Each structure stands twice: as C-alpha cells, then as structure tokens.
Length: 216
Ligand SMILES: Cc1cc2nc3c(=O)[nH]c(=O)nc-3n(C[C@H](O)[C@H](O)[C@H](O)COP(=O)(O)O)c2cc1C
Image (tube, rainbow, N blue to C red; front, side):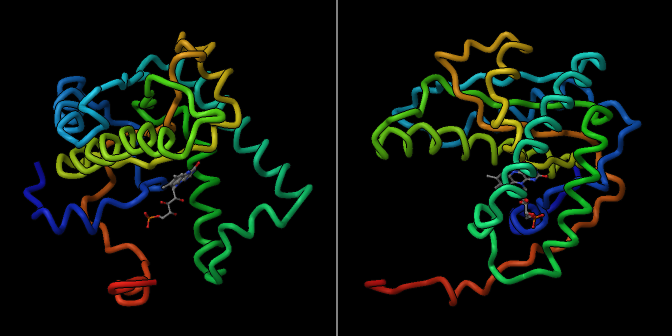
C-alpha cells in the first residue's frame, strides 16, 4: 500500500503507459483485492452482471496484444481515410496530443509485455438499445472499472483504460471464449507495478469552466 489519501488517489491515477514495470510479476491475490474493491461500486439494480477476464499467460497476452494492435491500426486507418473522425477529440491542445501519441504508441508496442491484461465484460449488448439501457449498462461497468483502477493505484499498480480493441471485439471474444452475443467488453486494461510511484495531477480544465448553476 502506498498510503495515499483519497484525494491523492483521485488526482494521481493517471493513464500509465511508459512507466509500467514490464519485468515485475503482479501477484494474483493483489488483483483479487482490487477486484473485490471494484465490486463495491454502484451498479444498475445491483445486478452485478459483470465478469472480468484477467490474462496472465504470456502466449495469450501476445494474442490479446495483437488484437489490440489490430484495433489501433483499424482506427488509425479510419482517421487517415476521414480526418474529420478525429475532430471529436480535438479540444485545441495539440502539444498534449503529440505527447499522447508517443505514449499511446509505446503502449501499443509493448502491450504483450505487460504482466496482466484485464478485460471487464458486462452481460447484455448495447446495439440498438435505448439510451436508458445503454446508460444503465455502461454506467454499471465504468464505476466498477474505475474503482479497480483506483484500488490498483493505491497498491502501487499502474493501469490504462483502453477501448481501441473494441474495433475487433468479436476477435477478442473468440480468442478468450467470451460469449459475444451475451456479453459486451468494456475495454482492455494493462496492469503492472509502476516505475516509481510519484504521479502528477492530470491536465484538466478548471472546474468553474464546466459548471452551470441552475441552468445551462
Ligand atoms: C473511454 C476511454 C477510452 C480510452 N481508450 C484508450 C486507448 O484505446 N488507448 C490508449 O492508449 N488510451 C486510451 N485511453 C486513455 C486516454 O487517452 C487518457 O485517459 C487521456 O490521455 C488522459 O490521460 P490521463 O488520464 O493520464 O490524464 C482511453 C480513455 C478513456 C476514458
């Protein structure tokens, strides 16, 4: 345990890509503790309809990482074909984007070396669902996943929430035996000890800029 305060955990749980320790194994018991804490998060009707696949076997990690890379390549090719797709992410911070792309590329190249690859899944499919059901389904998986990532941070483990492999969700389901028609994958979270334990606050807009009292 790093003995961080709640606020320290909330402000320093960064997306860790370059500072994942690829050489140090992560004990299974530690991951189970983090999943136990994850399950304390709120979830729709307390259905607890999620399952986590934790990939530890090196040969399987290589296959999972290959699918992640294929998803990333698919997204890159889509953006190359139609750059306007990327504009949903364009918030005018180009210096950050450059920094992020080297970091993203680093994780892309080393994903197979990360000791654990965690895939949260949720019972149900979103396709064609009313926004209420979509919110209920995603709204169940993210608090749980984020609790998991916070619990990891407080124990010296680094994580990165990624979703790009979902362009190849069916391939991942086939590889891992996830029943594709019944379960939606939330993403892929690499988990490793961090290289050093000091992390800074994220670059975010000031709260007052995004607050609307009483009406928009
Ligand atoms: C929904 C979601 C999807 C993401 N997908 C990816 C991804 O596929 N690959 C990746 O490297 N990072 C991914 N990220 C990480 C973001 O790029 C990261 O949170 C952002 O750069 C801010 O970093 P920070 O939280 O450390 O400040 C994702 C984050 C979120 C919330």
